[in-house]
Length: 252
Image (cartoon, rainbow, N blue to C red):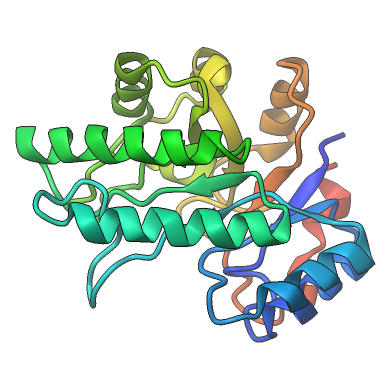
């Protein structure tokens, strides 16, 4: 039976982050994660985590400007990218979070690849000082057309090329089902470099008990791989979050 993490970027998004953490605990989640927590006092977030006993598994670097989706692969934006990395790791350290998802942005080509590699090395160096993991995540071409990271094999090649012990793949079943499919074999193949797993219904990113992916099978397969960390529920509840949680009983 998988342990579960509530992604508070989508679940209980109508609540302030400390209250969303408390709501996730009441609903029976084992951990939480978030997108961009920076508007909230880290002391209040840390207090909610301590009160509930939940761990914050991860957070994102900022997207950048309007209509941007990350900075790390943008040539000429290295100073902004590294400030975003420092901001994320500082906040993570204040709340006891041990992983940061560094967002690549909309870019392609050799210059983008060089910028991404250099910024990832910077991030890994800084994260190592606080025992943190750097996560990279491919996004699908429909939700994020032009995003630098397109599939798990591209991410795996980068992780292999850089050879950094604290650089890992964030395996989002929703995005990777759309981009590659064959999730059972892909999870097996990527398991050695995976740092976190997320899920949502496909194709509408709704609750996981509907759509084209059989998550009962996927969760059992992940268990069979020896994965023991909470899986991230990063879906859009399409109404009150509490009304969308029936899957927690039927899929576990």
